[in-house]
Image (cartoon, rainbow, N blue to C red; front, side, top):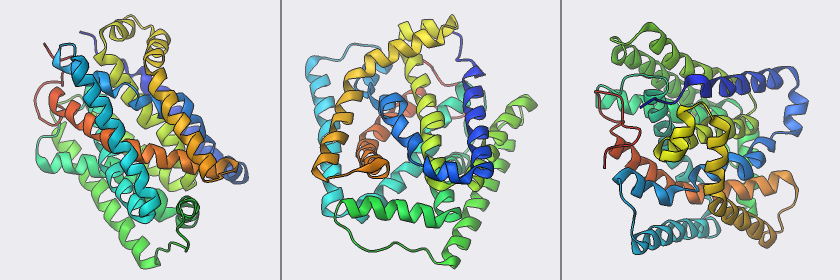
Length: 340
């Protein structure tokens, strides 16, 4: 079975490079468009990347789920998301903090399958390697924007929290920012060192790609304004990589990928994901109306809260995929579609 092509990485690298240049050369323009990537992600890739989660268990188990199993899965998934959406009204600061913690783990872990199956890196050779990989790949897009561009990040959080009734201003002391940057830097260095160890039997190109991606992400989040950077990452990095993984789990879409018909595979995926892409979007519209949210920043903030609420069951599905496809264990490349 042909594994997905690395050509999928080139648009992502190019998008991050262009976004970095824009942030450096046209900061005023980026400030005006800071919420645009997140807004674009809602109808394009962001919502869609979790919209076929209910199909994943059957595909990885190699059998069709019963109607009862599908109903329970969708009901549980939706119920958990609705309860956690309600948490934003009851305890918005807790909801934000919990989401950031889950996002660190999910965004870090979300890169592992892609790095093994597409970039061909070795699976982590120890628990320390796994933890370092997940924390580095998760903290860089979550913690770095908050630590480097604290003013813009905290202002965005304040705007989000105020929609749900929390007044006040979040603050990070200078010593906390410095301590956080040191911790993130040490974790990145540990991940680089352990990657060199894990991949010592791999071609040098594999090591350069694995380390290079982490350094690219680090530079991107160091140099790019926080809100714009996180939106771009979600739009062009996290979501497309998971969508590729989902397409590789569906035989018809995988066949299209193997014949280099990537656009046809994407169309087939989005057709399948349409219903559960539209439903959360309607939820965003409904919540925005209830909260009287107006303007790009407030609508995007509502979208972020909805995405946050969907992240918990989605992260659980992805973790189960990792277990089923053995991406956490050293050895051969993980299964794209495990045997029935």
